[in-house]
Amino acid sequence: MNYYTPVQDIKELEKITFQVRRDIIRMVHGASSGHPGGSLGCTDILVCLYFNLMCHQPKPFSMQGKNEDIFYLSNGHISPVLYSVLARTGYFPLSELATFRKINSRLQGHPATKEGLEGIRVATGSLGQGFSVAIGHALAKKLDKEQNIVYVMLGDGEIQEGQIWEAANFASHHKVDNLIAMIDVNGQQIDGTTQEVMNNRDIKAKFEAFGWQVLQMNGHNIPEILDTIRHAQTLCHKGIPIMILAHTIMGKGVDFMEGTHKWHGVAPNTAQLEQALAQLPETLGDY
Image 1 (cartoon, rainbow, N blue to C red):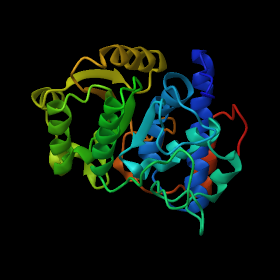
Image 2: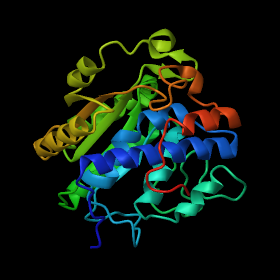
Image 3: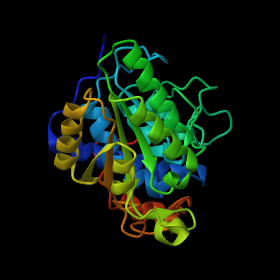
Image 4: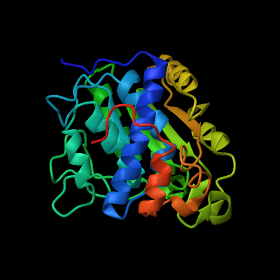
């Protein structure tokens, strides 16, 4: 198979994160809508996955993903970061990022499959459901005796959905041990902090009680992200699903967006766009 060639140099991965964050800001500004906060917060993690850790094949794209690692974005509203890393690893033309949320675009506000966008295997964004799909795909790979891993990203606001806990119980009961799930723990959701809206309390203890092995990492430290996920990979195929709590800052990389729910789903105006881009050096060339 024609797998993506991993980027090994940490400084190069860091450069890519700047460009992906530029993509996110420009896409959301261009559409005058979208979700920049969580997208910026998860950038480092998705760059590490797609550019280094995952064994995946951009071309030709396969919906089944046989003999590939698979990624699902359960919190699909942060689609800008996913679209950027997909385009920049060769799934579809980089120029298509300019169509984000436009009429007849394949790049909808939440990832969708009807338009045939390469890299998207299920419509996500109806919170809680992508987690279940990822578990199902991992179970299918186990039945096919594949050794590849399924990855899934959740939001910490998303885990307030009841379906998450039914799925978590299912995964541990059925020993879905080729699955690495991650929660973007930024403490923010659309209407305020997670503590104010519905306190998640001890997420680690909850998943451990549901039979998962839980790791934690700084979601903005690239060496730590790489080390933690590589460690998680060594824990796969041992009868227990893996959960990584990724501690992040919503809006990371743009000072006036950081650490507040106010940028969960608000597009910057032109002055704010320029202010944000001034903090994010262009490293790979804009689309």
